Length: 200
Image (cartoon, rainbow, N blue to C red; front, side):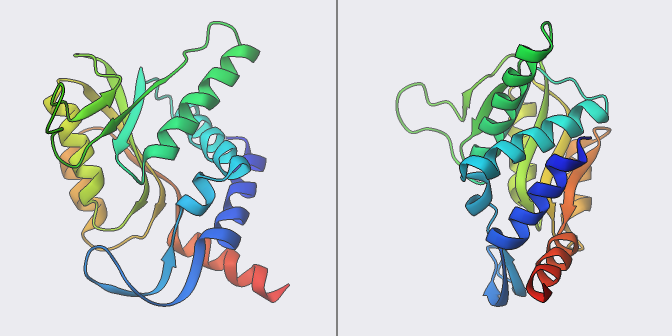
């Protein structure tokens, strides 16, 4: 992995996305910190670094999906930035696979085609499920199950930040089966970098 991309992304997450305090999580629990990855993934430079870091990790781990996707809306900028990173890489290395993206709705679309998956959706295709933060794993599991229901083959799962809650990883791994569950950072990685930055 290009460590310069990863290190720069870590610094940006710690500076722009991490907050200490008392917060209620979507899971209903409480925490003394909150990570809002979208302040980084929706930023121009932060998004670029996100796409590159994910794409580099996929290549490093030998994962060659046809597409990446995840549950709206935390995964939306992650998916788009990874696809863009793959296209930029293909300009420098002709013949490299350009990845497509797909987004999974939380519920089926009530009009039009009624699809739950927007974007790429091809039976039998190898895909990687991505997410920004994994806490309980619920959103990641929903995306895995939607991809599997569409007869796509999930070959990997990657989150930007894993909070390392007791139920998160086991739930994702149970849904993913033999596919590896990877992360770019733990919440403790972000906290440590945030604290280091405050001390400077």
